[in-house]
Each structure stands twice: as C-alpha cells, then as structure tokens.
Length: 123
Image 1 (spheres, rainbow, N blue to C red):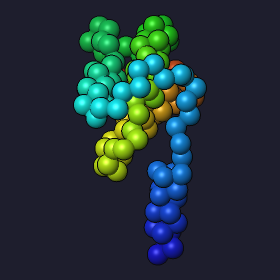
Image 2: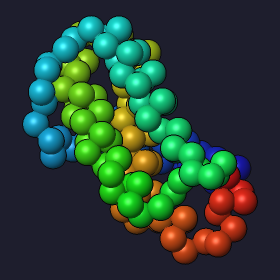
Image 3: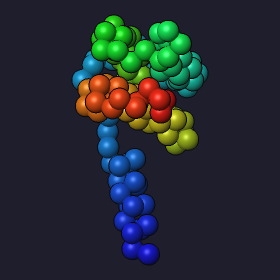
C-alpha cells in the first residue's frame, strides 16, 4: 500500500516541480495553444524514423543528420509561452516536452540501435 503512494508522490513532484531547462534561447515567443497543436503534429511526423530497405533507419549517420531538425523543434517548443494557459493546456505542453526529452535521452544515452542487435526486430 505504501509503494503506490510513494510512486504517486514522485510523479506529482516530477510533473509540477520540474521546470524545463532552456538551454536553447526562445525564438518566437508564441502564446497561442494552436501553435503547440501544430508543433505536436510536426513532432509526431519527425519522430517516425525514415525507412531504409523496408526497415526503420536507426543508423548513426541518420541520427546525426536529423539532430538539427530535432533541435529546431525543441527550440520552437521552448519558445512557446504558456503563461495564462489553463492547466490542461500546460499539461499538453509538458507532454510534448517530455516526449522530446525522451528522444534526446535515447539519442544521447540509451542508443538501443547501437547496443541491442534485436532492436530492429522489436520495433
């Protein structure tokens, strides 16, 4: 019984206590929720890996080539000003932010396509 309470407490702290790092300076400064929705659609298209001979292309070269595109999308997200947005819209922003952090973590740290020969089979 104690474990779910600890997990829930941890999630609340992570969701509301963490502030996104702004390593990349904001570029636009939009305050329109529709811009987030549009960016999310772009993000989902970007996130689909390109295909190479009928399989997802997770080569080092492809990731290196796509990195600037990722950084551009990340900058657009960080430039969106959520001040004055209702909580549900701010949560949507945080979800996109979390997904981008996951992509960056996979790219920089996990790299399953490098160390796991079964990665292509599991995707």
